[in-house]
Image 1 (cartoon, rainbow, N blue to C red):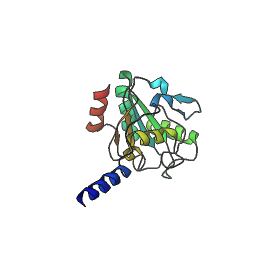
Image 2 (tube, rainbow, N blue to C red; image 1 turned 30 degrees about the vertical axis):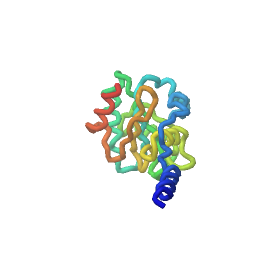
Image 3 (cartoon, helix red, strand yellow; image 1 turned 60 degrees about the vertical axis):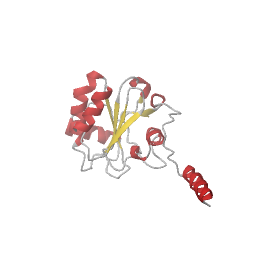
Image 4 (tube, rainbow, N blue to C red; image 1 turned 90 degrees about the vertical axis):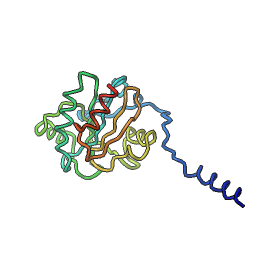
Length: 181
């Protein structure tokens, strides 16, 4: 009887094993996204550079993090870091069009790091980038709210994610970035 229970438990465990193993069938560098001005941002251009992807929103309580994202970009862009802002209305807190978002970011935060078009970041309609991150890193890569951060290393692998509450200039993020630069 004991052997049967052990066998059943072993089989049962295989059905519920973590499927978020990093198989990276598709590499980060094979993906692209549309910029806020309509051009294609080809991630192959970011090869051998770490990338911090942040889903953003104009009407969020975390919107002030744009200041620290710009500071992070200014501090590390010459060392290769890419900060990529991904405006999203997935949480119903973004402006209605790309032109308004671009103007808002320029006027209020003097943003000059790359921004994408307004993009879905969760669910079935999420952009391929966010599906890729989830498939290769697990549920923690799925934004739970605006200003969720995904850190990609120089090899195009997700190495960490950070919740909205984690400020871009936090010691936690800075340490991770400096370790992969």
